[in-house]
Image (tube, rainbow, N blue to C red; front, side):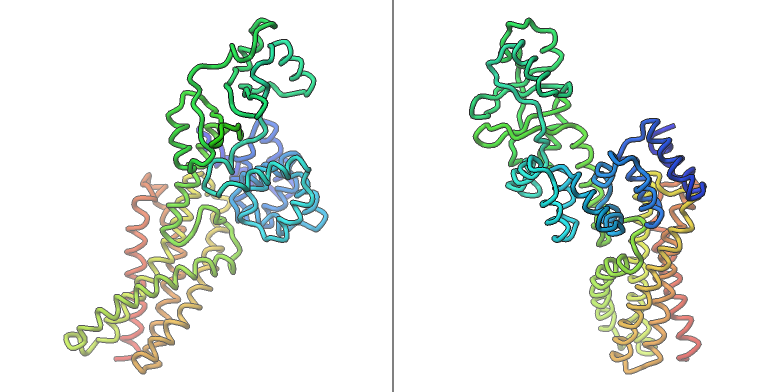
Length: 448
C-alpha cells in the first residue's frame, strides 16, 4: 500500500468511527509511526469541529509540529477555536522556525503574544531569521545545529558533546573563533577517529555551501543536484547561519507547485478543504468579481454587433457572463478537489460533508453575484424582467458548478481517468449547458 493509499485508509477508518473512538484510532496510528505531516493532512480532511477535537486528543508533544505542518487556514481554524489558556500554553511551546511559519498567517496580536511567551533562545533565533526576506534561504535555515571549533581534538570534541547532551547528529559543523564556516565532519567519522586527531583533518572534501541570500527556488535546485542530504548555509562573510536538508526542499517544492496550481483560480496553497462557508465565499467571491470584469468586456464586444442580432441582442450580449461565472466557480471547487484527491484526502466518509460545504459556498456566491449582475443588466437594458432572468441563471449555474465540481472528479476517478486533465473540460461543458439552458429557457417563458 502506497503512502497516499495508507493515508486515505486512515481518513476513511477515522471518519466511520464514533466521535469517542476517532481520537483513539488516530493515536493508535501515531503509535505505529504516523508522522506529523500525515497527521496534519488527516485533520484537514475533517470539518472544523471534528478537526479541533482530534487535535486536542493528540499527544501534547505533537501539537506544535502538527500545526506547523498544516496549511495556514487549517492551522488558523484550530487556533481560533482554542480557549485563552489553551492558546497561551500552545504559543509558549513554539520554536523559532514554527513561529516564522505561523507569522505570515496569524493576526498581529497573537504573534505579539507568542513573542512574549516563547523561550529567550528561540526569540533570538527568530530575530536572526527575520533579518532575511521571506523568499531568502536564510529565513528558513535550521539554526539548531552542532558546531565545534575546527582545531579541537576528537577527544575534546567527544567530551563537549557528552557534556551538552547533544543528540547524535548526521554531521558536525566546524567554525573558527569568528563563527566562520570551516568544514563539515561526519559524526560516524568522529566516532571512528583516533582521540588525538584534529577535527580539521577529518573534514569532508569539496563541501558545497549555500548563500543565505539565495532564493528558495535556487536553493531547491542546488539541493536537488547535491549528493548530500544536508547543506550548510552561510552569509557573505562566511559566517555559518545553519543548514537545510532534502525534506525542506521537498516541502518547499510542494508549496511552490500548489501555489501555482491554486493561483489560477484566485486561491492559494494554504486554503482549507473545509474552510468556513462565509470566509470561503468572500475569498472566492473576489476572484469571481475579477472574472466578471473580463466577462463584461466579452459581452460589450458582442454588443458591437447589435444590428446583426437585433431581435435577441440582450440575450446574446449577456450569455457569456452566465457561462463565465459558472465556469470560474466550478474551477475553484475542481482545483480544491484535485489537490485533495492527489493527497488521498477524499474518502466515502467525508464526501457528503464536503459536498454540503461547497454547495453552501456556491449558494452564497450565487445569490450575491446574481443581485449584482441582475441589477447591472436591468439598468443596462432598462428591463427588470431581463435582470431577474439573468439573476436566476447565475444562481442556478454557480450552485451547479459547485455540485459538479465535487461530483465530476469523484466520477472520473472511479472511471480511472485523471480529474486534473479531464475535469475542467467536462465541468466547463456542464456549466455552459446548464447556464445557457437556465438563461435562455427562462427568457423564452417570460420574455417572448
